[in-house]
Image 1 (cartoon, rainbow, N blue to C red):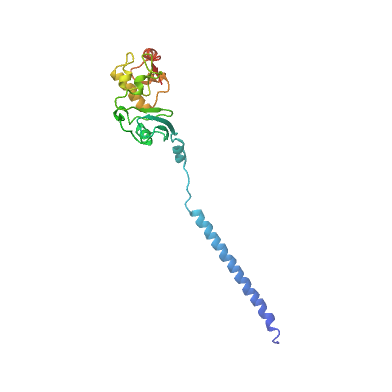
Image 2: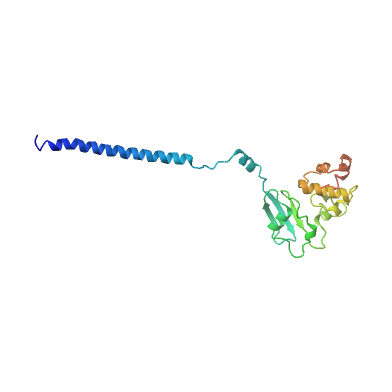
Length: 201
């Protein structure tokens, strides 16, 4: 065997070694990719459950409330569903100097489209003037803003029944129709008919 034949034998061995190295690199890459896929599959994924979706859907809509009178910044405010008078007044900057804060029920729920008027000390509440322009004997009593004294001006409404009307309003929100009075204990169809032309919502 001559020395010229030796490179011919070494070349296939080199090719075989190089091929094996390439195969090992490909296998290592495949293993790395597979590990990455498995880790990604086991990573926590944020999911919204059916209960969460129902909770979001049940979130009350925003309320538009016009706050006027003796507050720092009167105006139209957008409040979260379920807001109360205290939230509306806070949004308007709080009571202004001279406000009759005792005339306002801070715990009452507010309703969409409501106008909340804060009187000054010594000023008659808006409900006393009624819904009619300029007030007067023919003015109607607003069921959504009237206090006990204003409700007692209505026929057959005494202190106890007036208080029940306010308690119903506090628990259920604004009256949307005069017929809602039927839900107040002690008011039936006959009394409703006697009040229909004397109240407003």
